[in-house]
Length: 280
Ligand code: DGL
Image (cartoon, rainbow, N blue to C red):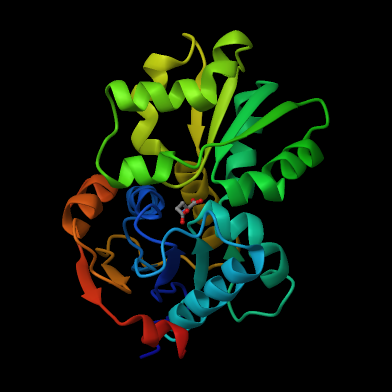
């Protein structure tokens, strides 16, 4: 399976991205836009989504299995396109030796906040991501003058997965978690979960005018492009990068959801069994 597609100047091996489910496709979309020459292999662990309410031990175990599955494709770099994995599992996994560079979405999100030049930040994420304090630590380590508030929004993912991204229900859920942002508005809201970019239009209506909304998908794509350049891993310019999507379960509503996240119908979807990942 490993692809031997390395020439002296260019490296046409694929980039591996993985997520608990389909939310990471928002990162794939940004990567494909920024790096159209690159081949991408995506693993969505749709059989075990969501990771956001699970213990750190379980998230780490799943993340290791996902990564080992991608490694079999001879990838040249990997991105955990999942905030929960990036927050709970990567700190341990990053210490280990890998034959390819591995990154997550937290630092990319932090870079986006720093680049905005704004100081008063609200981070929204799953229960696991917020409980880990990963964003808060990384933001304050990068700039101790930042004022950071973190808010867990556990109902966001299931509602988005139901295809509901605006209207009265969404407004009520915003009130439940975000009313505090109306009373004491932040300058920037960082969407610390792969699903949340789908709420962006509703959030910009809900939040006070002028609130900047950032997500880590575009920032992760920027980070990846810099990394490939720095390490001399870029694919040959002008080639048409291919995308392959592996899912551990083709759940009902899969096509609809995948289309929403990806916003484009390109690439090939390949069903695998959860066992293919667990027994890697
Ligand atoms: N991909 C997850 C994240 O970015 C959201 C879905 C889940 O809970 O697994 O945090």
